[in-house]
Amino acid sequence: MRSMSIDFSQQYDGPTAWRPLPVYALTRICCVEYIKRVESVFAIIAEPNRRAILSLLVSSQQSVGEIERQLRMPQPTVSKHLRVLRDAGFVESTVDAQRRLYRLKPEPFEELDAWLARFRRFWSAHLDALERHLDRMDHDRMDHYRKDITPTKKKTKEKTTRPKPRT
Image (cartoon, rainbow, N blue to C red):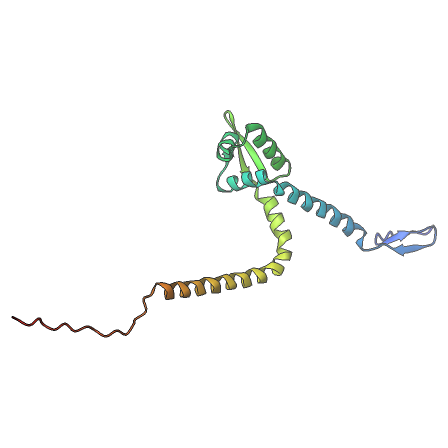
């Protein structure tokens, strides 16, 4: 009886044939799942009310009532959006007596930041160029403004006043 070692980088095609597995098979599955997860992250933060809630939670943890008052949204709407954010892992809650306090979890934002890092080089040069352009425009506008408000010196003959003759 012959012993056979199993090489997982190859695929079995019958009693005598082994062929290499495509290298991308597993990475493609992971990539597709990763893309679905990133797409769902963007879908979650695309909703304006959720972004407003996230913006509030950046500064400190907040209760549902505090979020409701600050955003002037009905309590059921705030609770719905907080549930979506909690299920997606963006926020976590703790119970404090009768209140539930919500705060941001940094991990999803770090993951999103890492994903976006690959694309920053595409827009950072453009943003730098835009900033330089706006600075030049601002500088030109200020120069123009200064010219408008600075009085120009006109050469005028000074009137000499003669003393009035005494009569």
